[in-house]
Image 1 (cartoon, rainbow, N blue to C red):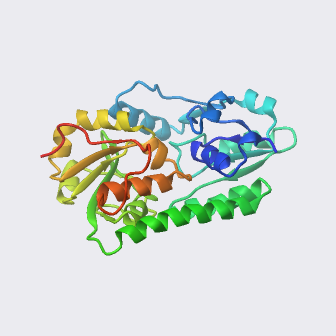
Image 2 (tube, rainbow, N blue to C red; image 1 turned 30 degrees about the vertical axis):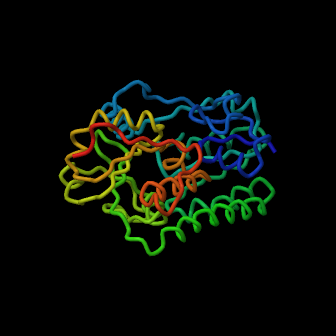
Length: 300
């Protein structure tokens, strides 16, 4: 089967399910596993990548208010590659090419490829999408097996932290302006032995004032700017060191959001293992080779 993936998390899931050799094209953001970097790219961002956080937020708001796409689709390449299956998403207009555009383009392609949209809001949804995606590729049992393996890893963390006092955690998926991380992140925090002080499972990410963040009295702040890696997240945390210190948390971490938090795929299990270690290092060992930083100058 020839598969085009228009979402990084779907690309990661396809490779984890053993369909990597069937993937013929991916997005400009797909970078894991390494084999994806040699594949044709089907998208590009309409927003300059070098803008500071506040300008990125403003540009996204302006384009969405005008009904303009954040990502542009290379229709010619998609038609030339003639996929039989296109995997996309509709839940977040900031995260991928619009679902409506994908369906419109697919309808005009030779053979009429199937379109599967993965739109999880919770951790359970993310895991449930794996059998559904595998079924669309003709091997549903692979999805069930992968879901079971990931569940086992998550439950191992839950078991390790059971009975320990939960840590009060604030997760920020943007800093300028600050956004409280939602969707599956509160469940990840709960599985790791914490309690999210400002978000509930399945709730959408939302902007919040710094005063609201301070009033939440978090013990731990996890800085996870959407789509960024640990070093980039740490650089943003350093730039907002004063604001973050004013929240009064005992510890502040910058984590590898692009790999283990913002993409709703198999590597969320890695993120839960990392959170378990950061919140309860005495109970959960440090995950192997998973990046995080404790930014300098952010503690009160």
